[in-house]
Image (cartoon, rainbow, N blue to C red; front, side, top):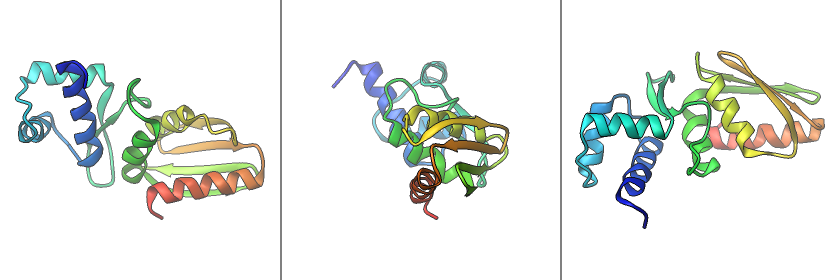
Length: 154
């Protein structure tokens, strides 16, 4: 157990990973249900410190890590929270893997993938709705594609 602030911020991460939260007011309501009665100013500060922003998804905007994983969050939890809501397709050829996202979703997904440090991936390039992963081999591309599809639920 950490400080009250650390505990509150951990709860915020849990809530936005488990629920499609689309507004600060909805997040405040969900936090109240868990025993955290926070002001709008405190919540805004927590969201900024956790680098959580509203990102577009197929079901409307929701809170997710901006440009990747908050320093204290587990990478896997970030991927499992981001990918199902942002990734809409995975395809590849040779050593190249293309990940399609909803508009505006490529940057946070690319950063989260980079943060994983998968040895099969040489690097990523993220646009607005498309990510190019350069893998070490065709077999590595297949493994990464399978991993991503498993997380997305394809």
